Image (cartoon, rainbow, N blue to C red; front, side, top):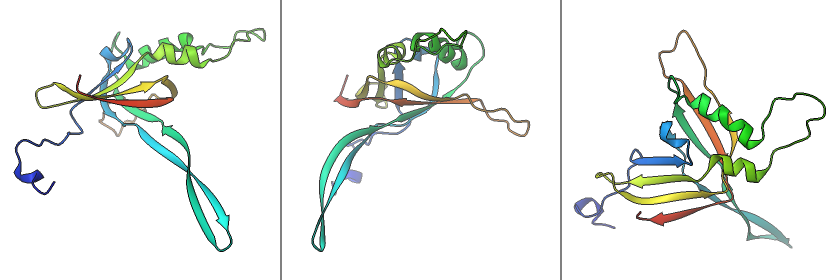
Length: 169
Protein backbone atom coordinates (compact mmCIF):
# COMPACT_ATOMS: atom_id res chain seq x y z
CA UNK A 1 0.00 0.00 0.00
CA UNK A 2 2.99 2.32 0.15
CA UNK A 3 2.53 2.98 -3.58
CA UNK A 4 -1.15 3.88 -3.28
CA UNK A 5 -0.71 7.59 -4.00
CA UNK A 6 1.77 6.94 -6.82
CA UNK A 7 -0.38 4.44 -8.71
CA UNK A 8 -2.99 5.57 -11.24
CA UNK A 9 -4.32 2.00 -11.26
CA UNK A 10 -5.63 2.09 -7.69
CA UNK A 11 -8.80 4.09 -7.28
CA UNK A 12 -10.42 4.64 -3.88
CA UNK A 13 -14.18 4.29 -3.55
CA UNK A 14 -15.79 7.71 -3.30
CA UNK A 15 -18.59 8.38 -0.83
CA UNK A 16 -20.62 10.41 -3.33
CA UNK A 17 -20.71 7.72 -6.03
CA UNK A 18 -23.65 5.46 -5.17
CA UNK A 19 -27.25 4.58 -5.94
CA UNK A 20 -29.96 3.15 -3.70
CA UNK A 21 -32.81 0.87 -4.73
CA UNK A 22 -35.75 0.22 -2.41
CA UNK A 23 -38.05 -2.17 -4.20
CA UNK A 24 -40.51 -0.31 -6.42
CA UNK A 25 -40.43 3.02 -4.59
CA UNK A 26 -36.79 4.07 -5.10
CA UNK A 27 -37.04 5.49 -8.63
CA UNK A 28 -38.77 8.60 -7.29
CA UNK A 29 -36.28 9.29 -4.50
CA UNK A 30 -33.54 11.92 -4.56
CA UNK A 31 -31.33 10.34 -1.92
CA UNK A 32 -28.92 12.78 -0.29
CA UNK A 33 -27.06 10.25 1.87
CA UNK A 34 -27.06 6.56 2.70
CA UNK A 35 -25.47 5.07 5.82
CA UNK A 36 -23.64 1.85 5.01
CA UNK A 37 -24.22 -1.27 7.14
CA UNK A 38 -22.39 -1.66 10.46
CA UNK A 39 -21.56 -5.10 11.89
CA UNK A 40 -21.15 -5.37 15.64
CA UNK A 41 -19.87 -8.38 17.55
CA UNK A 42 -21.02 -8.42 21.16
CA UNK A 43 -18.56 -9.15 23.94
CA UNK A 44 -18.90 -11.61 26.79
CA UNK A 45 -16.92 -10.84 29.90
CA UNK A 46 -15.65 -13.62 32.18
CA UNK A 47 -14.19 -12.76 35.58
CA UNK A 48 -11.51 -15.10 36.87
CA UNK A 49 -9.75 -14.23 40.12
CA UNK A 50 -8.02 -10.92 39.46
CA UNK A 51 -8.39 -10.98 35.66
CA UNK A 52 -11.10 -10.37 33.09
CA UNK A 53 -11.25 -12.34 29.88
CA UNK A 54 -13.32 -11.42 26.84
CA UNK A 55 -15.03 -13.65 24.30
CA UNK A 56 -16.95 -12.88 21.12
CA UNK A 57 -20.74 -12.88 21.59
CA UNK A 58 -23.74 -12.36 19.32
CA UNK A 59 -23.50 -10.62 15.96
CA UNK A 60 -25.86 -7.75 15.22
CA UNK A 61 -26.29 -5.32 12.35
CA UNK A 62 -26.95 -1.66 13.21
CA UNK A 63 -29.84 0.11 11.44
CA UNK A 64 -29.06 2.15 8.33
CA UNK A 65 -30.39 5.63 7.63
CA UNK A 66 -31.26 7.30 4.36
CA UNK A 67 -31.72 11.06 3.98
CA UNK A 68 -34.00 11.85 1.07
CA UNK A 69 -34.99 15.19 -0.52
CA UNK A 70 -38.77 15.49 -0.77
CA UNK A 71 -40.25 16.70 -4.05
CA UNK A 72 -43.57 18.17 -5.19
CA UNK A 73 -46.22 16.06 -6.93
CA UNK A 74 -46.78 12.36 -7.46
CA UNK A 75 -43.14 11.51 -6.74
CA UNK A 76 -43.35 13.02 -3.24
CA UNK A 77 -41.37 10.98 -0.74
CA UNK A 78 -43.95 11.71 1.97
CA UNK A 79 -46.74 10.45 -0.30
CA UNK A 80 -44.87 7.30 -1.37
CA UNK A 81 -43.86 6.39 2.19
CA UNK A 82 -47.30 7.01 3.71
CA UNK A 83 -48.88 4.92 0.95
CA UNK A 84 -46.77 2.01 2.24
CA UNK A 85 -48.45 2.20 5.66
CA UNK A 86 -51.43 0.02 4.71
CA UNK A 87 -49.18 -2.62 3.10
CA UNK A 88 -47.00 -2.66 6.21
CA UNK A 89 -50.08 -2.98 8.43
CA UNK A 90 -50.21 0.53 9.88
CA UNK A 91 -53.87 1.52 9.88
CA UNK A 92 -55.82 4.28 11.55
CA UNK A 93 -57.85 2.91 14.45
CA UNK A 94 -61.49 2.69 13.42
CA UNK A 95 -62.99 0.85 16.37
CA UNK A 96 -62.12 -1.51 19.21
CA UNK A 97 -62.66 -4.57 17.01
CA UNK A 98 -59.67 -3.80 14.80
CA UNK A 99 -57.20 -6.45 16.00
CA UNK A 100 -54.64 -6.67 13.16
CA UNK A 101 -51.04 -5.81 14.05
CA UNK A 102 -47.73 -5.41 12.27
CA UNK A 103 -45.82 -8.38 10.90
CA UNK A 104 -42.23 -8.66 9.74
CA UNK A 105 -43.35 -10.34 6.54
CA UNK A 106 -45.64 -7.48 5.53
CA UNK A 107 -43.16 -4.82 6.64
CA UNK A 108 -40.20 -6.24 4.69
CA UNK A 109 -42.29 -7.20 1.65
CA UNK A 110 -43.75 -3.67 1.39
CA UNK A 111 -40.27 -2.14 1.28
CA UNK A 112 -38.86 -4.73 -1.12
CA UNK A 113 -35.18 -5.34 -1.79
CA UNK A 114 -32.90 -2.63 -0.43
CA UNK A 115 -29.62 -2.39 -2.33
CA UNK A 116 -26.92 0.24 -1.88
CA UNK A 117 -24.71 0.16 -4.98
CA UNK A 118 -21.26 1.71 -5.21
CA UNK A 119 -20.34 3.00 -8.66
CA UNK A 120 -17.10 4.12 -10.28
CA UNK A 121 -16.37 7.31 -12.22
CA UNK A 122 -17.94 5.80 -15.35
CA UNK A 123 -21.19 4.93 -13.54
CA UNK A 124 -20.39 1.21 -13.53
CA UNK A 125 -21.35 -0.72 -10.41
CA UNK A 126 -18.25 -1.87 -8.54
CA UNK A 127 -19.99 -3.35 -5.51
CA UNK A 128 -23.29 -3.52 -3.68
CA UNK A 129 -24.75 -4.05 -0.22
CA UNK A 130 -28.03 -5.98 -0.06
CA UNK A 131 -30.03 -5.65 3.17
CA UNK A 132 -31.93 -8.85 3.98
CA UNK A 133 -35.47 -8.57 5.41
CA UNK A 134 -35.22 -4.78 5.73
CA UNK A 135 -38.14 -2.83 7.15
CA UNK A 136 -38.73 0.79 8.14
CA UNK A 137 -38.36 1.57 11.84
CA UNK A 138 -38.47 5.37 11.79
CA UNK A 139 -39.52 8.13 9.39
CA UNK A 140 -38.76 11.78 10.14
CA UNK A 141 -40.61 13.89 7.57
CA UNK A 142 -38.41 16.97 8.23
CA UNK A 143 -39.40 20.44 9.36
CA UNK A 144 -40.43 23.86 8.10
CA UNK A 145 -38.91 27.15 9.25
CA UNK A 146 -39.14 30.75 8.07
CA UNK A 147 -35.48 31.35 8.83
CA UNK A 148 -34.31 28.35 6.78
CA UNK A 149 -33.72 28.28 3.01
CA UNK A 150 -32.97 24.55 2.91
CA UNK A 151 -34.80 21.75 1.18
CA UNK A 152 -37.16 19.41 3.03
CA UNK A 153 -35.24 16.27 3.96
CA UNK A 154 -36.92 13.04 5.02
CA UNK A 155 -34.90 10.62 7.18
CA UNK A 156 -35.73 6.93 6.98
CA UNK A 157 -34.23 4.36 9.38
CA UNK A 158 -34.29 0.68 8.46
CA UNK A 159 -33.55 -2.43 10.46
CA UNK A 160 -32.52 -5.64 8.71
CA UNK A 161 -31.35 -9.14 9.63
CA UNK A 162 -28.01 -9.03 7.85
CA UNK A 163 -26.23 -7.44 4.90
CA UNK A 164 -24.27 -9.04 2.09
CA UNK A 165 -21.56 -7.32 0.06
CA UNK A 166 -21.02 -8.33 -3.54
CA UNK A 167 -18.13 -7.11 -5.71
CA UNK A 168 -19.09 -5.95 -9.21
CA UNK A 169 -22.53 -6.13 -10.78
